[in-house]
Length: 292
Image 1 (cartoon, helix red, strand yellow):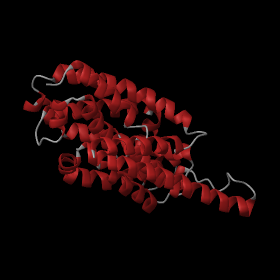
Image 2 (image 1 turned 60 degrees about the vertical axis):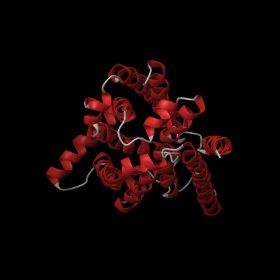
Image 3 (image 1 turned 135 degrees about the vertical axis):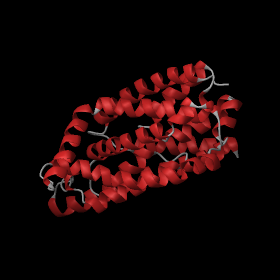
């Protein structure tokens, strides 16, 4: 059965790794195995278990932390979308951003609804998570490589390595959809939602700051919807006997998520994904050796 200590550790792990581009699901699969939490490991790959109820609480808490941090932005986006529906025109950056997020949310929403549970049961194994974590590191490396090549071409033409950076409101709806498709792969344990969507943004010409902002905003409705959709798991038999632990773990997840997004929004104003790529490659390879 889930202990309060385990719930707090898993909550902090969720809050940090959901936003850092290192995969929350991958870490939640690997760490319990390393710590010898056999009951948690068994619950992760079970069709029905208290782990499903725990995920609901952690996801809702993480999403609420993102809503709180971006509350002013979300207020402008919601007003903009409502206004654009009424006027049938896109006249402001907030209106356009709102519809870009809607378009980008659709692919992961549909696939997650159909396949999330099946993929979690099949791939929630330490060896699989370790392999996908290595792949995640390679994705981050490739994203930075593509970014540097694009900057190099611009620099050769214009003499300015920072020229050519696109802003969020310049994205096309098809490009937003492609970023949403990239988010689908985060259903695999070890592939980071924030990491793969940031890379998709970098490939489309966004800088790190705007890529991170779009990634965090895009994650909010998906994470919140996943939690609300599975609320019966928390309120039903899966939550029996563990709801106090889930409440404590969720509080830890919410606090960790808020502090993480606050840190990362500042970090990506001037830094890159490279340190996270190195971390994923190192941890993934070590885990592969450990669980092989």
